[in-house]
Length: 254
Image (tube, rainbow, N blue to C red; front, side, top):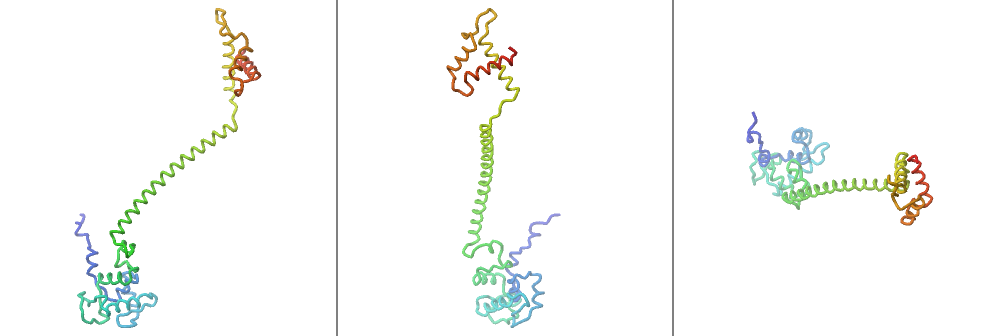
C-alpha cells in the first residue's frame, strides 16, 4: 500500500530551520566532515581552549571553532544552550550552541564566498552573492534556452554540411567525366551506327513506287548539306561524315 504524501514527507527543510549545533559540531560540519563522522573526529581532537577543538589533520577545525566563539563573544552570532533558546546572558564556552539559521546568516555575511553544503542548497552554492535565487533561475532558464538554440543550429549546420559534401562529390564526378570522357561501349556504338546507316539509306532511297524519298541523289550531296548547316561542330567534317556513313551502311549489312 503506497504511503500518503504527508507520511513520506520528512520536512527536512523545516526541521533544519530549528536545528542547533554545539560550536565544535558546527565547526566540523563547516569543515565538510560528514554528519555521521563528526563525533568520531571530535573524539580524536584535543581541546586547545574551552570549546575550541584541534584536529590532528583537519586543520580548519580549530580556526573555525575560534571564529564561531569569537562571533558569539562579540554579539555577532546569537547563541543558546542545549535547548536552543537564544539567551543574552553569558553561556559557558563548552555549552554554547548556535542555530542553523543564525549560523547560515552569519557565514553568508562574514564569509560570502564560503557556502558549506550543510547550510546552503545547490542553487545557493552556485549563485554569486550579488545574485538572488530568482535572478539565478532566470539566468539558468536563459542559458537553457540558448543551449537549445545552439543545439538546433548545430543540427542545421550538420545537415547543410552534408548537403554541401554531396554537391562537392557530384561536382567532382562531373568534372572527372568532362576531363576523361569515356567512349560508348560496343553495343551503344553499334546502335549509333545502325541509326546513321538507316537515316542515310532512307534519305537516299526511293518509295515502292520508285519516287525518291528526298531531293538528295547522293551521299556527297547529303554531306554537303550537313556541312552547310553544321560545319565546325564537334564531329562534323567531311572526312568524319564519310567514315560514319560508311560504317553505318556496313553495320546494317549494306
